[in-house]
Length: 381
Image 1 (tube, rainbow, N blue to C red):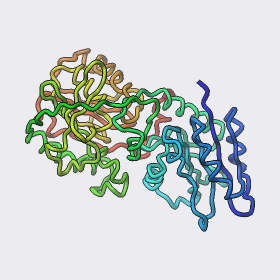
Image 2 (cartoon, rainbow, N blue to C red):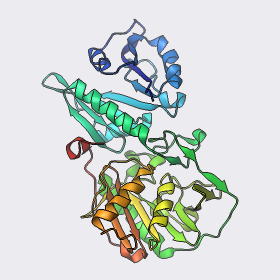
Image 3 (tube, helix red, strand yellow):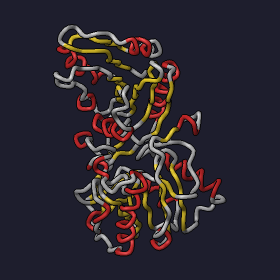
Image 4 (cartoon, rainbow, N blue to C red):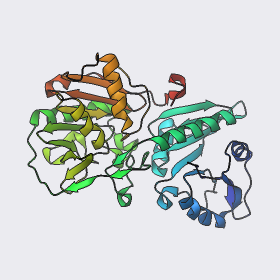
């Protein structure tokens, strides 16, 4: 399937703008892309509206500070894969600052431009802090960018979020070719699991500190993804799996913050008015795969000394199930009937799965390296 690319870069002002040599160089390696390199600021809105016609938009338009920024690509086409950029030649912005900006723009990938001996150094990264290229070679950076976009497009995702609600910091992430969940009229009573809730609350602090070296998570990821660095807990009770709803502060989580879900005829159903986390389709299938597992906690930091999956997958990618199945075969002696699994999801985080809450009460967590240099870990993505 052809990937229709729109590439907008260069300077855009009220005096006709100016072309960028870097954009011209990148354009050499983007075959069949529609290129706009510098121009009149008043033309940008019309170009922005054309984003609806593309699969990928590389939006690197530089606008003077005195003019309103025009870059809300995802508002025009929420399904488009967006590649943004940030000039950081004086190292004014930390990597955390760059990630925050990437989240704000809902970018799938971002290229940072800094200076190295009067040459532009490029760092290609995603919103989870994974770096896919770093160096001075525009051709190599372009190749890494296109390779990662192709991988993103290949991801299978069953979404818990409708297009109208697709504004959360992780709800939009890798939101291509999704299938909607289905709402059920069932209204089961949610069982009280005080012991598990206590463990989840305690881990909320550990996850935040291990991931960001601070308890002030909001300054890094924002409220929309608050649930993500502080874990996605769930537990099994009969037919239903109860999974925490989105945007819940796990430090104060109560039983009412869990949503009953179940799998029927290959479709995921949720009960009530609150939709569960984006990882629901993964966790509900993992419960089916692992009969002795009754509790899960997913976080965006790593478990000390736990084994790693091989492919860096985003939140909600159903391919995570195959990665976990493969790791259980290799590391856990192909035993799918154990009571405890501790697994690191490379470039993403971790998942704890247990039969009893006490088994996961005191697991040692360590922060991911941010940035995490994936290009050094594997040549395949």
